[in-house]
Length: 211
Image (tube, rainbow, N blue to C red; front, side, top):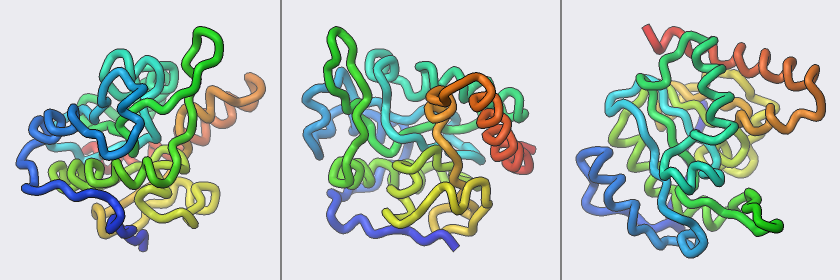
């Protein structure tokens, strides 16, 4: 069984919000860590208020930071394509990130993604817990190591449990798979195709939750 990790080091949100809209409004002003200083805005989750499937990624990217919406950049487009092929309607899911602000470093005129550290992920954990508690999905899908370890602890390895539907105290089921950005980083077209096929196999295991 996938166990819930402690969030004792992170600030708590009281009183508990009643709706996702209320949570989103509160999150706009979050300064629990320093990432807000260089981010354009908080990028909260979006989707249906009653999802069967909740997807959790790592953090917003450049386009997400500018548009204020999760998974609208290149990785988001790849995810959209994969969901469509797997027979999952994105509009009937909810998609969010473990970290709600874009962490980046300058490289010329570009803003390059920088992996959030443990303290930054822990600072955002109450928002993630609140989303889960409010939405009550049937299955949580962690996209990549940061999301998986945020919920399941630093020792969890996606490579060891990829695609498994695990029982969890967070939701009836939890699955971990790769983040779509890892497919985009594949060194060549053949590897990219292979990794996309593996990702699709994982997503197709969720079909029973879409009926």
